Image (cartoon, rainbow, N blue to C red; front, side, top):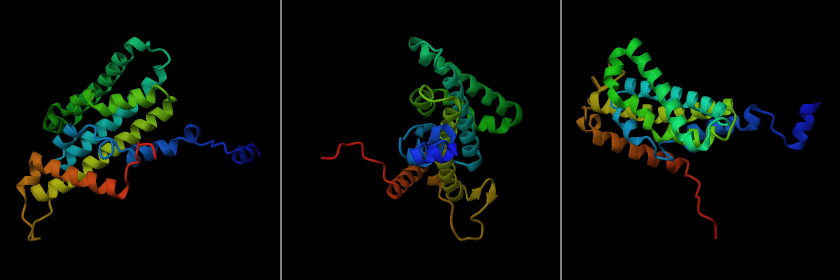
Length: 220
């Protein structure tokens, strides 16, 4: 009975007061951190030479964004404004170090391949931006979902670029030969840094053509 009343009144009783689905869609597609906001580009392109590296880096960002959003939201009422950003950086660094140590313990070869890029998540604009813009103003579970959504959006773009670069730059995918016997030659350009910028540029153009970003200018 009460649910019918809520529906008649236009009240959305879904997860996060009805914002859960919107938050997930925004982070993955509508305001994707790479294609729409063009954030985290340098570290993103540096790890997309192979799909395996891109997936691990994407997983790292999902973990750090989700946990940072959760903890910052829980503590938002207790953090003095003058030290809020310092506290957020400390929280981010804690989860980055945890993930880095996990890689070193259980996936040491990948830890060496990624080098300093996992540690650079501490300075990634996406993490601090979501902590400041979303987690400080929303409840914990919704903030965690926002982190997962933005992390998945970031990981998805990394994976697409990495698939393209690994296939055409190295002739493999996840280490398995792909171009053998197809008559298509490997192109070293895509294995190098310029290939990453070319692939990212075309992907951003293509996705923004399919889903044009909303204009922020006032209509006349």
